[in-house]
Length: 256
Length: 290
Image (tube, rainbow over all chains, first blue to last red; front, side, top):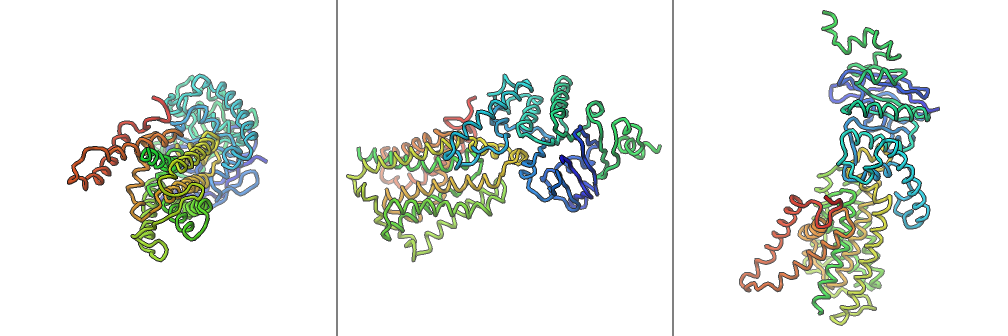
């Protein structure tokens, strides 16, 4: 069962509780959103799920296994793959190499295999190149395959990041603000790609500030405020929920 | 002719040394400022074992193994440090190793050094053996070059670059960053040990003064000047650096000023290193054109 379950997850930095007793469950294969004002703990939550931060309290399970306390690369190998809020293209590598390096379980990444199983390494590499080529076409990056990723536009770098995630053959993708800083045309393209992935059976969990985008593609959303989970439901329900409105408009303003 | 062969042999040994550093610095992005320690461990281990009666080639293999083992032992704690701190740890490690050579006289004869290190029997001793030693170093350097090129052009080389570019991305993509770095340091140390062993059996006399920060800077210069992260860069860098430093001998420098030459050379290396970093960080053969 491809399911993510958080139980009483808490994380503090100094005296500041960034994530406060969050419990949530993601099931089904849909697209789930995680929204909330800046500093509400969304990205911290993603860091906790993917093992980049260790939690103070609580437990995270994925596919019926406890993943809290595991290394990020171990969690990634289980099929839970993330992107980052700031684009992190591998600047001094080509676009194609960016994608190729994301392929999982490469025999050729072990020095001994390079010499002992050259045929297998070569065959695998050929398959990965084919797959990367297809993904580059889907993302309209075919023409810049050999360019350094650092020389691409911001939007293209975001697509490269998504391309890498696709190469990684994930079961669930965590996207941290996929539409931040990119133009409407690219957002449309991104929406299509995310929908396509989802229809291929990959569960999507995304952080977003772009509400129209969230309303368009997410079936359910979670809302966080000051480290706490304050809402779970459909985007339409969220719009009429007092606590969500409070969180976004600010309590003082709303009261006045 | 003999002198030319001598310089080429030294350049080939330095090429191996530079290639070994480039795996760490150029591919994985590890700033190892103590690489000379592994060169020294290879040299001393191989020299002492061969003087104790072990066949030279077997001693060299042991020198490589000792350097690799030292690399592994350093890597485990030092790689838990990030970036600059790793560099400082390696720098200190190299100084510790040098002080060990200097002070453990029962083993290393301290500052007197170790004279009379044998060359392999099939190569022989003295000037007459130069062509054979040249052939030997050429073959070893070529083998090292080909093996390293094979590795760096494979997916292994690519994943090392991912670690260099962004450790977080590497982790998010399921790469075991720590293990990849450890492998890099072991491989780099192994080959530095080989270069050190070759050096010991070639010059036949080693002392702690041969393994100082100056040598680390020299090999760093070879890598950066030639082009880090490329396969030919360190080789070209080693030849340029060794040939230009040897050519100083032919300059008409009055003998009164001779004592200034060595310190001045060190300053020039440093200045060239800084200049390349500023003006042409990719080196003569940059990893990426443009």
